[in-house]
Length: 272
Image (tube, rainbow, N blue to C red; front, side, top):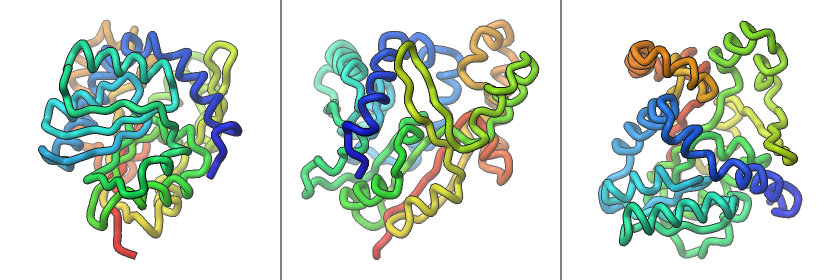
């Protein structure tokens, strides 16, 4: 297990810096809503009313509140104290009494949950697991919290994002255009930096085996662009609508599904 003192504090500090602006920059943006709607369409097919779900890297609580609105109980965790504070405030203001519990707990310490705790599924959205260097250990920890046949849904940033390559190349910034391709990059927010990893689908299958088997993979933001294109897309709302329609058609096709901004993988806990 990667000790918290070695890896997670830097990530937590980075996300603390992002917390106050995160909903404005992504959650409430046109692009953020389009990408999140694509993930939600899968969540509502996989999770059922009455389920108890563990959410990793919950951020400001948008997904947890959505699941709660659909009759799902959520234990939501994040390494960022500022994110948890905002999420808890939203819970009190927007959905008091909703079956959601927010916890300050990084993924690397998820083993600290009670060993007897069992969930009907686990979920992580939008790149939180890209900041975890040892996914093999994470998979082992998560396996203890699920029974055979239960789902694990993880949404990560891809290694090859066509939009990113084209957008920054056309702007002459080739370093950013191909920053993901090596599988590792350093993200800086203010004075803080965090290592970000971009595993392939095959690498993820290896990391999560033998406890989990991959059932499906779908692209998120294949033609819908990344969030930093928001200013441009606001001037072309009809294009965004078209991109969303195209994504619904091609996001599960081999080849296309690994070229978007993110991909969503549906694993299933298996009996060993």
